Image (cartoon, rainbow over all chains, first blue to last red):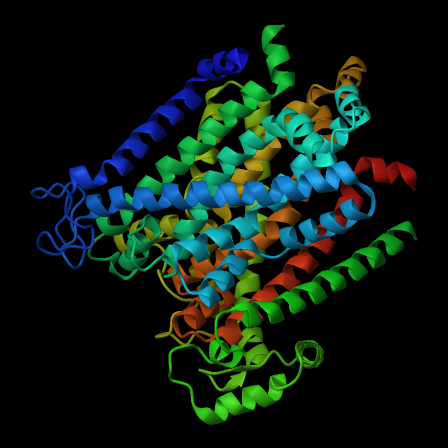
Amino acid sequence: MKDLIKAFSHNKAALGGLLFLVVIAIAAVAAPLIYPHSPWQMVGAPFQPPLSGPHLFGTDMLGRDIAAGILYGARVSFLIGIVSTAVALSIGITVGALAGYLGGLVDDALMRVTEFFQTIPSLIFAIVIVAIMSPSILSIVIAIAIVSWPPVARLVRAEFMSLRHREFVEASRVLGVPGWRIMAFDILPNAMAPVIVTASLMVATAILMESGLSFLGLGDPNLISWGYQIGAARTMIRTAWWMSFFPGVAIIITVLCLNLVGEGLNDALNPRIVRRRKA
Amino acid sequence: MDRLNFIAGRLVKGALIVLAIAIMNFFIVRLAPGDPVSVLAGQSGAMDQDYMDELRQRFGLDQPLIVQLWIYLQNLFQGDLGTSYRQGRAVLSVILERLPATLLLTISAAIISVILGVVAGSLAARRRGTWWDTLISSLALLFYATPLFWIGLMAILLFSLVLGWFPAFGMVSPEKEYTGIMHILDVLHHLVLPMTVLGLFYMAVYARLTRASMLEVSEMDFVRTARAKGLPEGYITRRHILRNALLPVITFAGIQAGHLIGGTVLVETVFGWPGVGRLAFDSLLQRDYSVLLGIFLITSIMVVIANIITDVVYTFVDPRIEVKQ
């Protein structure tokens, strides 16, 4: 663990990404303190360009503050990104662990299902799910989780397959420890390293997908989000570029930072690179 | 012969996946809250009784679920994907007339992103540590984090509205009735922005993948052997490193086919490109869910076909498979 933190902290890009994410997260949590009014509320004249008066990033066609929308939107992005990743991880880990540990027919069947979910076009599948369940935080989380678990399952399966015949696992089995305990407490902790790396990249992908869904009008109608802001500004690009510009920058910075952190974790956890660094 | 067997196996597998998608399509509608007929007719309350009765009849909704599924699959295999409530026409023909525009967009975006991505990635790998590498790697990282629809809007702002180089909307200039070569040039002129925007993300993916993969392969023993034999560096890069480094790129191109087709929904919506993606957005707005489900099925079939093609291409590129013959 110490080695991990040391390796990670040597990676300046990853560290910078992490720092930025913390700042964005604090701003998201503190949104009601910075902008006490609702982001849906009209606070000024419509179509105010950035830096005019009190509105840092300008106002939209109804005189709503773009910056306030971005801060409140950060909450939605983080919430959906983290929750849907957590759900996808639990599906992926369960499927992958069962397939890798039990092998045989169970493995075959579960892998066919995984392949199937990997084949179908994910964004269109997510659109269908959200449209038919009608848009809400819940349906968006379900849709993103359903399309993003397969890579986790494959990863966990591979780890379980290589670990299930190791001595410490055999030892537990001889002692009569039930299978689920072996999977959860002996193998899983040793298989977590690649899963953690994937998880940080999945949060980034989930945020991108959520923005795409709400850009298409499939966001939760009660919550402002970055994708919604850009979608609402789409037809007004000629008159008010700032309406779509700034929420997009917010998405890029967040996703970029998550990717940098993911890469930093990968380098820190990847034994090959660590060895090379020590040599 | 081996290859024929392999292709046949992949076709059977692809057909099974399509069947599974069809069955899932059937259950999605039935899992949705409320009567499947009112879901398909769009829950907007604007449906008429005749249409709903016709739907009930067609799906055999008074029958047990398994019979309903059988009826649904029978209809599918006769090419009947239902009727678009808004357009009053068969879903299949509504989708098929939009397909050429989407194929033009996706295939050109796929080609340009693979070519430019591989070129940029190998350039970065060969000049590792130089400013070329830094520039290409940073741009790839940036585009990898950028939402397609946002970059599309910014491209319209810069290249259409400010500079006026490319049209912002549609596939042809409606005010000019071009024919022949002028028509083709007009379409290509409209194609540049959406194709580039759709391709940028994948360009970034392929550039990163090619770079990482080339650096990995270039440290392998057979490359050292080739160097020890005194082969020229350019030859080693082309014949030994790049050929092996391309394998993960090809695998990934197959996996990305589904994402690429999903991306058309966003890009076609931004650019008003008259393809299947824009149709998906319009049917969302109009709650024309028979069309949406039809698009899901058709695009899934396209992905299955794309995967079979990449698998076959793989057998031609993988040097290990060549040895076997």
